[in-house]
Image 1 (cartoon, rainbow, N blue to C red):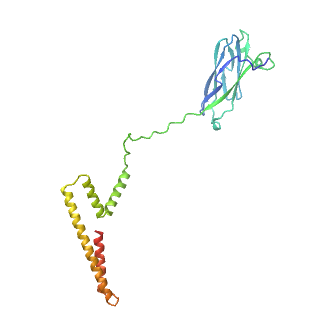
Image 2 (cartoon, helix red, strand yellow):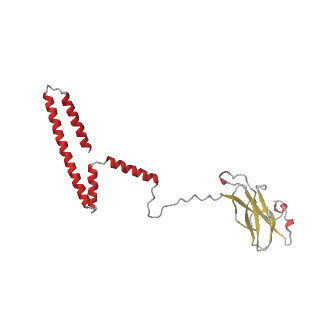
Length: 250
């Protein structure tokens, strides 16, 4: 009688897992455990017999014992799409008489036509992708420390400082002096610098105001001469404008 109702052998695992690598033979094992008091004959079949080698592919498991079966996948040239495998294995088992030899286990014992009670267990095949190589570890700065500036950063910083210094005016300089005072770095040199800057600034303001008054006076006198400008007046106004611009730049 051919039946699936009775578990003659316990099979572990129910999935054959192969760590897949191309151009390399890969093996895994399964254990057939007989927990009965009978002798159990078995046979292992696969849907891809040219791809796998099963040792042993048939045999006898004595009562209350376990037999190991090694399944070897032949080297593959390339990995399947998405690492999916449709291969299947089938383990068939029947009760045999004590004293039966392994050579007596034939395929006819597992057919529907035989009078044997046949148990069948199907196994799936799973491919395990190879582990990914570790990513390179970047050196990190010590905890709590600031990243070290590069040479290019230093050049850019110096350039910016030079530009700022060149484009600064008196107000920036006074601000820097005030900062030194706020930081309690007030010295005799700082005091002298403040006095000198104050004198120069007051002198520049006075000269600027005086030039503005002279320029306005010159323009009023020129307007009185029938609305026209003499050559001398034009030259004077130009010179006063140039001098005023020079003082303002200081």
